Image (cartoon, rainbow, N blue to C red; front, side, top):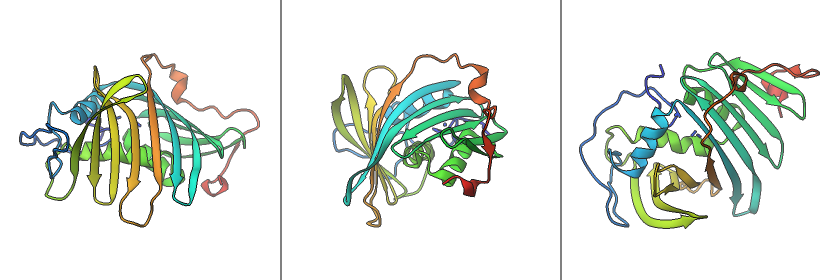
Length: 256
């Protein structure tokens, strides 16, 4: 089913992230600061669409993201890093290290393995037929970087024609993130809101992403900051899992 890479962290997006049929939208543009395109159909030439197309068409991706999660009741709930290796059509490896634990997610296209190195436990389930489908399986199981993957999924969805009030994208000017000059956008769809900064020069890849919900039930905020790698020569073993000596295969319920 992987006929096109959606932004399915990292295709993400996380990425070949879905199998929606492509529909050519009517020409619209985001121009000045504060301008938006109402019902958010992303068109060729806009930075978010260029980001989407690059991730869709790349045979392999390698990036890292540092993340932190906070809420009004806790200045910092968790933080850590996640490293993504992604290869078309359906393989990925994600290594997540947080304040709580380290978890490795590996999909060879047929099997998704979730491994906890410190506990020497692993779970294996059938993979989906797309990278994003399998990543969503992982997020549903253990909430791996779900907000970031939701963003890439939403951008993929907003590249097709949709009805009024489905989404809204607002240009918010340019800012520096570290040493990079970045274009800033606000993306809204239903109760979800993201602010994303895309590299202004060269390929418009994400520099930073802030994810929030706006329905009042949760004020938790997640910040992801990205580092994109140039190396694309992944070893075949990157997407293979051989149980380390002393490790044990368990049920999902045994991974706490």
